[in-house]
View (tube, one colour):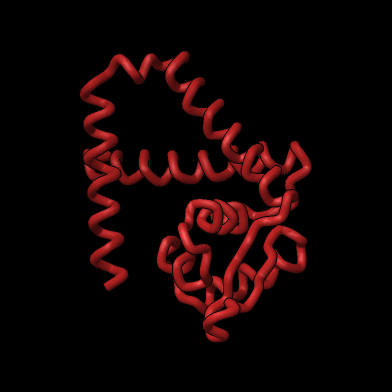
Length: 149
């Protein structure tokens, strides 16, 4: 394999492994949501105004795609969707206690994953690796913004 193929394989494998391990870890703890649904909950939590439009923009998805996910999360008692009192076109989103519990488990998974990487691989001592990961992250952020426009 040439370097391009190796990098592609590494990135795809890394992404797939993290998602699969994350989903399996949550399922073992009784979370009956897909990773997409968990990430929608996370986007709601991190959004300032918690409107449908703001969350869709944060996730870089269409309002229609978000609506499908939100309706599923409402049925699963994870999200409360209410009309804005001043602008009836706007829907506000809030998380139920059950959703907040799921996010605690999700955050704990991320903390444990990062701690394991720090302990096992001593990544925090590898400035070149940290710099490379930052560059890769910045590249994808820029690429994502270009494709959304």
